[in-house]
Length: 234
Image (tube, rainbow, N blue to C red; front, side, top):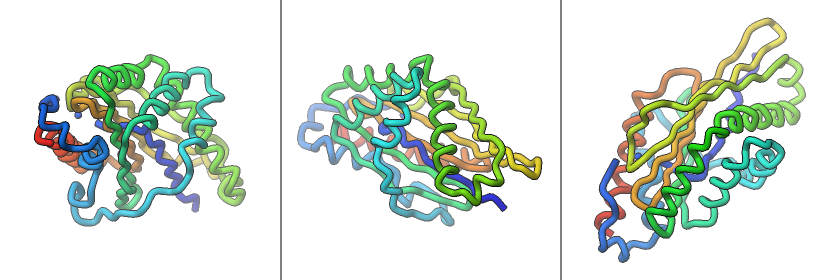
């Protein structure tokens, strides 16, 4: 039986409309602000587990994106986030679901706004589709036994309308369909969201074979509230 692939595409930024940072925020370092917005174990219900992220460098993902014409905004978004203080959550897993996030803190609200605009570029859905196809196919190349069972990998991703979290937010969601030689198809749901909270940009990514919105949405809202508080009270 083929096992599920979960190459979590970490959009190095993370998510959701709250209060702008106050003057006292100067007493809190940007790194501390970033850490306040990462997901933690208590954001998830019983049964979810934590593990360290895979050590695959961001450069591998960026290299794949560099070969895709529609991924210019993705590369720009990734580079901007890595050039600012940031913090990463571990992986959170439950059965076939995985959730993770990263928070980057910019020098100003204006610079964070520019980052979100980049992530909302009309080319992003096509980029993510092609990038995920490339990621899954690369994984198959490294696992010949599993690759022998697979006939196709098809990714479909579309923007999510009316995402109202943080000062502004952008989200994309879709599926990866893995066709097997026995005629069946294995489907994995994938999603990405980025939200600006003051001068911070929080990015979330998730994969699952079932609907995890009842867990995911409260976790994101809770982490965003911490990010808001960290900037407002410093």
